[in-house]
Image (tube, rainbow, N blue to C red; front, top):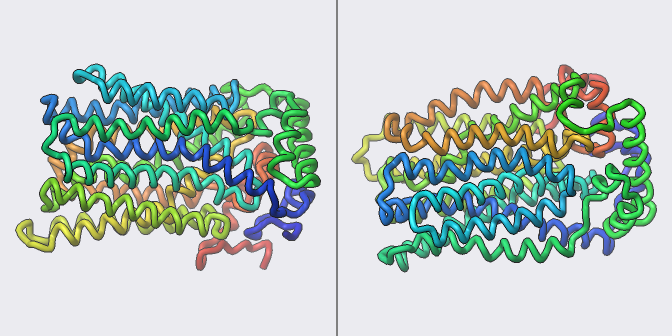
Length: 500
């Protein structure tokens, strides 16, 4: 590795001073940690995806109204908003590792409530418990991975969590379709669909008992010997010492500047922290306003609206999960090659175009045309593929990178809280919107996409190729925003006038 970071961004001393990244047993250790931690993402994905196939049989068997069904589905999402906020704050207090262990227990308990629920109230309680765990997973796991990964491969390591999420959703879609085909006539088949979630929860719990704590969190809490011991297992010796020295130095600088007291007050009194939390919130909300989770929660309903029958819709919906997995592979391959801003712009441009095409197809293709559902299914497939290839993983990686260490959990929890809240509104009202507007609903998503594209371009700083400490230095004095007006789009990279 050369002294300058990848991507051509202005390097701070934090990147230049680090020894080159090498391979060895320490790199394999990072791989194992990411596999275990990403079981949280798998649970996140399965619990959000399983409802797409389970909500129909569940509502029919228990006699739920459309409103009750909406409440059951959206209760998880609204609880996830709370879980994201609390999970981030709790992980700042007790540690990333312990927070993930607590989260695994909640996944298991919530699953039991849903599987053995006699009626509406107990199901909602179970879904709320699952939602709290899902929300916590959405903030704590990416931060945990980002704080353990070397900056050169941080994007691909952190992005594995989102890959696990979409894999969980794809698994849920496949299990839904298989169970519906084989046992769709059996009462309570939806309980089996939900019960599968308990298995990875057990593996996550026991796996995390053997995983290390985040070394950056340990330094923040004065546990330097433990941090050194952890870094020695996931870095070469010289790299471990250099990284630890940087984290210690930055922590001391924050304390000298009276910025070492983490909390909401620190964010409110620092204009640069206020700005980045607002930008982070906008990024999290923009991701949800693409409508991706409307497809993941209600994909079969959208397909039935286009002309498929229920069984065919369940089978076709598995293609959306497959698109997400394929897109995830593409995203991971490019995560440490393309700037985050590049992927945001490409992703929002493509998803907005797909929204327009779905809306146009819904209006112009006759409802009795035999090819109508297949055209719409292909367009939605392309939307999911575009979203996952260029937007979803990049958003979660960026959120895990951008915030300073001593408020990282609180800041990402705040941003993701609002993202989940918007997600919850969509989960609650999408059935009503699809009933009222049909596929014209996609025109609303397209309009919002244009607005969000402008916001992303104007406000989002670059993070690729920078250490977390280097980013923090530039963020706290506002230097990170100085690059924004100088960046122009072009051919997948950004042109910096100061370099040409």
